Image 1: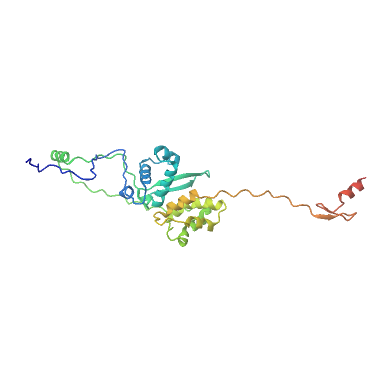
Image 2: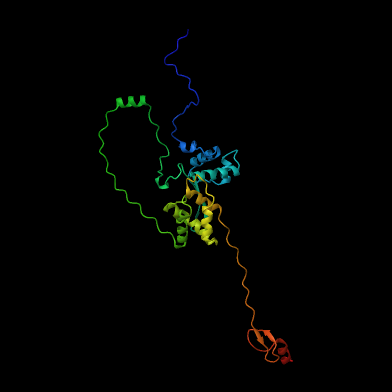
Length: 283
C-alpha cells in the first residue's frame, strides 16, 4: 500500500484564493459593499467602478453605459438609485458663480462616512519584504540608532464655515425642520448647508415651502440609511419647472364722459364733446 506523505497539502474544498500583493492600480472595497445583502450585482459592480475612477471623471448615465458593457441606461439608473438609498452614493447640484448648476456625484466607500475624515493616500506604496529577505538584511545591517521622538506642532483648530447668503436662510430652516415631520430625515448641519442651494432653487421657481417638505418626506424607503443622499436625489430629479410668464397687462379703458352738447355717454380721458358733436362743430 502506498504511504501518504505527511507534508502533502490537503485538497481544499470550495473557493481557493491565489492572490498576489498589488502595489499599483488597485482599489480597496469593503465587504460591507461587496457582500451587501440588499444590493443587486449590478449595483455592487457599479459602485466598484465608481470607486476606481479618478476624481473629476464623468459619471453620467450615458458615460457609465459606455464603460459597462451589457448594462442599459435604465439598469444603470436603477443601480444608482439602489446605491443612493443604501448610502454609498449622493448626487447633488451645485451653483457656479455665473448662476449655472452643475451635477456633483459623491461615492462613499462606507455609508454615512464623514467626508472630512477621508485621508488621501500615496499613489503607490512599496510592497512589504518577504520574511526571509528581511531577516537576511537585518543580520547584515547594524542596529539602528535610537530615534528621538519628534515634537508635533499643535494643529490649528478648524475654522467655522462662512455664513450662508441671506437668500438661503429660508431653505436652511426648511431642511432643519424636516425631522419634525419625518424623524428619519435627521440631517447634520454640514448636510443642511450643502443642500440649502437646491431648496432655494425650488423656492425661487415658485414652489411653496409646505409642498417642498411634503415631497422630500413622502414615500421614504423602509431601510433608509443615508437621509442626506435621498434628499439630494429628490432635489435634483424632482425639481419643478419655472412658473410660466403671466399675461401681458392691458391698459385700463378711458372713463365714461357725458357730451357737453347732446349729453351722450362716451369714453374719453377728459370731459368734452362726443365724436358726432365734434364733427358737427367742425362742419
